[in-house]
Image 1: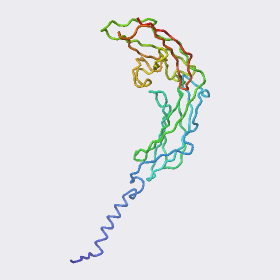
Image 2: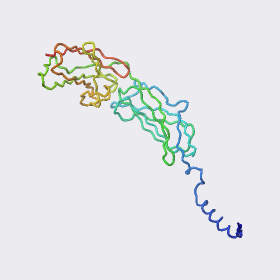
Image 3: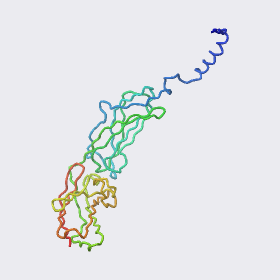
Image 4: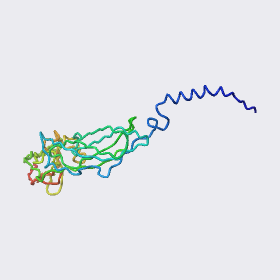
Length: 275
């Protein structure tokens, strides 16, 4: 086999072409913009501060109060191009908008602390989930980390103002469809309607049922339909069906409203006579 040797002059154009290629690049392979790693987020030593907010210390206007929390996180990306941090504070009230949504642009990683404004609805006590994640320059998303903010209210229990339930009802004739009977408890709370979790009703001191103010979304009673008309209006509903095969007699219904702090209203009793 012959080894062919080229004169040195042939290498100069090749070297010039290679130099022009690299000169035209903004960055070399392996530097920012060429990497493929996503950002990573981890909690700081004080992740959510404060961890508890007492609504008795807040000023409410039109049913809303504004406050803020700080969120401390560690940001890391092998490419060094973390660009945005996102914080979402979820309300404990099903179907409610987030209590806070925050986005801030950053320049790289490290330990960072962010001040997040939040808006709390009157009576919306409970556990608020705090979700934090990040994105890089090419919009690759990081992992998500979760913290908790507890919002407490005053020590006043809810009140059952009235109950919509008939005193007497007649069973349908044999072979006729069941009668649909909505029972509605009208409830108020000094700490706001959002503070009321559900109304408990015990039938004949044996069977416990749950009345919901969920707009019939099936979110408070193990997925069962409540027949509730409108969520959040203070009218807690339970819908029962009376068939021809149901036993006649008197049924004792005992109602108790329960708030998010576990406080219970005075019990209200009603008797339904089935003929």
